[in-house]
Amino acid sequence: MKEIVYRNRLLVVFVMTSLILVSSLLLAYAIRFDFSIPSVYWPRIISLIPAVLAIKLVIFWKFGCFRGWWRYVSMPDLVQIIKASFLGSFIFIVYAVLVYRLDQIPRSVLILDGVFCFLVIGGIRFATRAFREHYLPLRQGTEFRQAQALIVGAGDAGQLIAREIRSNSQLDLHVLGFIDDDPVKKKGIFQGFSVLGSQADLNNIVQERGVDEIIIAIPSASGKVIKSIVERCRASKVRFRILPGVGELIDGRVSIQQVRDVDLNDLLGREPILLDDVQISHYLQGKRVMVTGAGGSIGSEICRQVAKFNPQKLILFENAETPLFLIEQELIEQLPHLPIVPIIGDVRNRSRVNVIFDEQMPQVVFHAAAYKHVPMMENNPAEAVNNNVYGTLLLADAADHIGVEKFVMVSTDKAVRPTNIMGTTKRIAEMYVQSLNRKSKTSFVTTRFGNVLGSNGSVIPTFKEQIAKGGPVTVTDPEVTRFFMTIPEATQLVLQAGSMGSGGEIYLFDMGEAVKIQFLAEELIRLSGMEPHEDIEIAYTGLRPGEKLYEELLLGDEGVLPTPHQKICIAQSKTLAHAELLTNIEALLGAAKALDLVAVREKLQLLVPEYCPTGNKPRAKVIPHPATVVHE
Image (tube, rainbow, N blue to C red; front, side):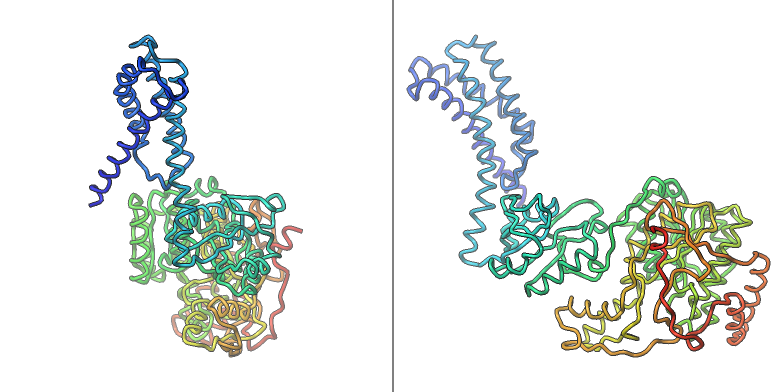
């Protein structure tokens, strides 16, 4: 059916173009002779018609002027029409000179013919587009009122959105104009729509113009700017949506189809991360890369990011079957050329780990496998030790044994002055890879960051589920704060940190300002179309076992050093000598194997003297963020 429609359309375009070519020639003669063509010229005109059709139809066909939809004609199409018209007219002139010696063919006719041919063929296409974009939407609006849209941001993204809305009547949207704070764009006109004012004028414009929907189209804006715009949109009490940030628009395409509701990532996001792709590519491209915990939130995103740098092979090491299957299938679908090796295994199984390293010979390892839930690990300290400490020890030893080039460990801010089992075990893992780096050819580095928005089991999915059930939303304490990053943001910085340094460093990420969990709860409720404390209650449950009121990124005796990347700095951390550390870790592992939980806590305290369970210490105090120190 589609082929028949295409053929019919092609026939119509062919016939119309033929009529235009003939009409252009006749009009050129008519104007040359003041619309009274002498009868002596008619035989020559008739003899020229087959030639002009044969020459110009072939040229226009070769330049693709019969393909494409006139409703979507653009500047590239216009360029092709110019080229076809010029070449067609030139060949026609050469034909007239060589065959007829310009007998009864005035020179002005040849020039006018070329001009008319271009103007009519190009003009009819642009008239069709203008008709569809301006007239048809208005005509349809007489029966169904189109929603009146206001676009915040008159930059490239906003203009592309406006153009698409104007050209697609099926969207049932009509653009009223733009809002933009740029004084250069004030009172300007873009894509035929005016800049109506700045953000400060938003509410007045909504009331005066009858705005039904606001589209935020500033993909490069920071979370602070987006939050300010969202607050104004909420005050206007009309629907608002947002174009994703540059981190999500990887391929650079901007479309109304990508506009979505605002979420917490938009409100909490920082400035876009600028990666040194060349530096990252140097240690990933053409390399055998292994990711442990490949099915987890961070691990799977590391896989996606690493895959962009064309590794020789990507090894997915995961204990859970279904998450491993899902990330494997996703990568196969998106990158069918990339060799992917999915491996089910437990990082606590020495034989399995050693066999995997011997068989796959990874050159770069990202270690993201860990137990991360604080209250869960408080109730299962022996398992936390086995997975987070022993698993890291086995992986690091295997990497050292085969000569892995780079071993990147993913750690957490909870390893700093830990008040819980999970954070303490991660701190011991940090210490082990640091100490091993001193005697190994492998470069061991650690990356330390806070909570990740939207990760499996994190607070955001929990809040969303509670809101869907009608509440209450549970918050441990009205004053509790956490550092947050988005999953892509965290993993991109992990990759960047892995490309830096010679080994032994603990890299800290600029997490921005700590965010109150209560703020997250309230914003999620509002984004769900309800009011906190009115439609959805917020209940305070008290801090859970092992939880802090505040998190920190530095120990008291740790200083920071800057790096070439503005969002990454280095913690000047100390650790025990490798032999002494290993002796203490073996004692800890022995207690965990014997399930002697009292001894486990004692050994943890011995290894990490700053470890102090929440029941034994007052609320933690917040300390300056390392980024503040670095950039003073």
